[in-house]
Structures are given as C-alpha cells and as structure tokens.
Image (cartoon, rainbow, N blue to C red; front, top):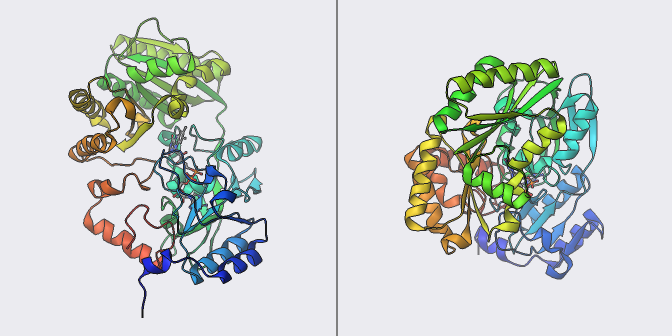
Length: 475
Ligand code: FAD
C-alpha cells in the first residue's frame, strides 16, 4: 500500500530516527518533546499561536545540517528552519509533526576581506554582528532593520529582508554574492564563488533568497559590503501632504543622487504614538500630517550639512516642506531616528498588533493610505492604526491594534489586501508570505507564476518536507 506524503509526514518517526539523530548531532545537539524545548522556539514575532515541534535540532556545521536533513528525509519528517525568530509572517513557526532546526550555534564570521569588501559568515550570525564586523573592516553592510540584534543573516536571506537601506543599496538579494545551501535530501549545494559576474546558466542561489526556508537550509553566506560614507547628514522634515513628500524626495535625489540613503515617511498617527510609547520630545512645535526622516551620505560633514540645509531651504520656498531639523551630531541623528523605532515597541503596546507590509507604485501610496484609513474608519470607528514606511522604495507599513477592531483581523486583512489588489500592489514588500499572507498570494502573483514556483519546489523538495504549509499550501 502506498501512503500519501501527508500520512507519512504525520506518522510518529521510528525509534531509529532518534538514534540516528543522536549519532549525527550528539546528545547536546537536539532536545526532544515540548517540556525539553524552550518556548521561544515555538513561534516568532508575528503573534502566531505557538506550536511545540517534535524536536529542536541545533547543528554546529554544514556537515551536521546535511546529516540531519538526510535523516529527516529518510524518515519523512518535516523540517522548519529557524533563524532569529523575528519574522512577522509566521514563516518560522514549527509544525507539530516536524522538527525545528535552530541555526543559533552556527555563528562564526569565517572571513572578512578588508581589501575586496567581502565577508563569509555562517547563517546564524546576527545582522548586527555583521554590521559591526563590516565597520571594523572599514566598510558598511547595506541592510539595516529594527530587529538587527536578534535576526540572523540566514533569516535575512531567506526573507530577502529590506529595511532602511533599500533606497541606496537594494534588498538583501543585492548584498548576497554567494550561498551554501543544504537541500532537503542532505545534498550540499556550494555556491560561494566570490565574483559579481558569472553568467554560466541559472543563478541557482537566487531561488533560495526569499524562499522562506521552503527549498533548503542556508548554511553559509558570502556577503558584499559597501564603501563606508565619510560623512552623513540626518534631517527630519515636516510635510503638508504626500505629494510634497514625493517632491522632496525627487529634489534630494536630483541633488544628491544615490547618496540619499534613507527616506522614511511617518504619518502623524505613527509620530504621536511613537513619541508617547518612547517618551520622546517632539521635533516640531506643531503636529503635521507627515514627517520624513532623511539620511544623506557625503564626504565632508560641514559641507554636506550646508548643502542639505540649502536643499531644504529651497524645498521650503517651493512649499514642499513646512519645517525642518538637521542633526548637528551623531547623537542628535540617533535621537531623530529613535522616532522611527516604534515597531520594536508594538508587541508590548498593542493587543496584539496586526502588521501589514505592502508595496505600491510610489505615486499611489498617499491615495492608498487615505483609502485604507477611510475604509477602516467606516467599519471600526476608534481603531488604532499606524501608517509608516520606507516610502523612498514604495514600501508602506500599516499596523493596527487588534483589540481596537474587536479582533476582526481577517476582515481587516480582506479590506486592506482588497485595496492592494485594486492599486496593483504587492501583499508583501519585505516580510514574506509565511503563514499569514498565504490566502492573498494570488492577489500579487499570476496563476502562471504560482505554477512555476510549485515546479521549482517539486524539483528541489519532491517530498514536500521543507517548511511545509508556508508560502503555499502543502500538497
Ligand atoms: P526567522 O523569523 O527565524 O525566519 C524567517 C524565515 O526564514 C522562515 O521561513 C525560516 O524558516 C527561514 N529561515 C531562517 N533561517 C534560515 C536558514 N538558515 N535557512 C533557510 N531558511 C531560514 N523585516 C524587513 O524586511 N524590514 C524591516 O524593516 C523589518 N523591521 C523589523 C523590525 C522589528 C522590530 C521586527 C521584530 C522585525 C522586523 N522585520 C523587518 C522582520 C524580520 O526581522 C525579518 O523578516 C528578518 O529577515 C527575519 O530574520 P530571522 O533571522 O529572525 O528569521
């Protein structure tokens, strides 16, 4: 009798599974049973209900990852890779009949080449550690986001993370020169050639970037670093409306080109809430519909600040900017940026937060935000929703306190994603699909695209063991 993949996956693994694992990972390399597994491994930051896995596996090397995947493959046991568990789409939440593989014992920076600006790291290294190692070598790393202290490079690659630097450096994909990946059957796929140009057939590593652990486990990453700017100017501007925000962005880019490193837009609800949560002083005497935080890179601190001041003066004369503050020191710049760090406080203050991360044609973001707010106001008067985002690259975040919409999260999603579809946007700009956005993937992908994705999944993981039920429903 043949059993279906699901039957196989759901059956309890045979005793040999556990002895094989112990042999491969040693007695300290895995914990078995809910009582033995710390609850932090049961879910991620998304607020998805926790699920204890059958076992938590903690490999120390590529060889151990390969061995454990070979064993899981032989016993048909599903595998959920876990990085820093800061994901906001539920993609790293375990499945009850599978194992979770935590990468937190693979934290070595293997090589930093200060001359070529390349760094090779194991997948479990935190983003912040990579950033600090890049600075120590005289370079910078091109991706930054609020969860930097906890999220891991492997997780950043698997979600194709974005964050504050995308305008200048692109997403995580643009920082990855090479990967080492272990496939579901334990095959190690080394793709770590330190070359920017390599047109020799399919660029296989791209399949694993943004795959959310559904195609294999990333074990090592070859990163491209960026030249460190010699000077930086940070400013906060008060804006009368969205069109003016785009006008200021265009003005700054025309003047400073790719040196405009960040353009973060915050609607007034976000600004007020962030100040309240973090007990911050207002940058401006009055409230304004929008505030933008702008970073510009340059060579000379004083000259750069003067040039930014001049550009903002012209923007004021043109009626694009109402008020502006330019940081006079690194400390002042950090305190301006603090306002943008409210997302780290959301879990503590919202009950729970419902997060959206959408992408839209840049010109439509203002109208989209207004349409969302109007639709929310009509159905849930008194809702607490915050609008903010990396608008320089077309990315808008919306976060709503579930309690203020009577826990009607699904109805809220239907309203917002319906508008995304109407505006021809993307239901995920940077957080990924995971569990949470699966029902809406078809809003942003054609049936033909979905069929091609499934074909790739089938080719690389024919038993459907890698992170089953994430991105698209398990077969
Ligand atoms: P996890 O949450 O552990 O996992 C995410 C996915 O990657 C899962 O599918 C998991 O299976 C897979 N995975 C993890 N490691 C591996 C591996 N080695 N091999 C294969 N698959 C793996 N995201 C942004 O893009 N931009 C932001 O600005 C941003 N800001 C944030 C701010 C805060 C305060 C928080 C809490 C989150 C934020 N995020 C942001 C979301 C999150 O930090 C990113 O998605 C991050 O890239 C996830 O990394 P992680 O290591 O925590 O991965």
